[in-house]
Length: 65
Image 1: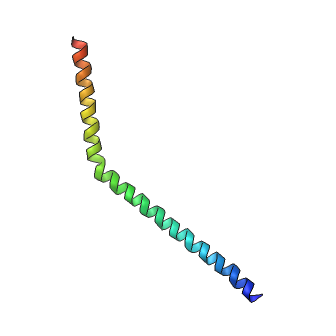
Image 2: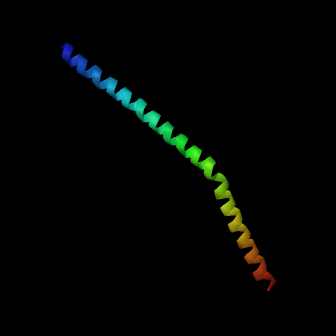
């Protein structure tokens, strides 16, 4: 009876540790995503600004002709 109780308790402890580990993994991935977004945010903004400027210039030139 004591052996069975230990097995049940041990299984629950492992599941709790796994949940904590998965939570830490998700938090680490989220932190990496935030860092990448902040690091590349300026580059992406510049790319969109350049693209929008090119489209506006192209549209303005076409309408004037």
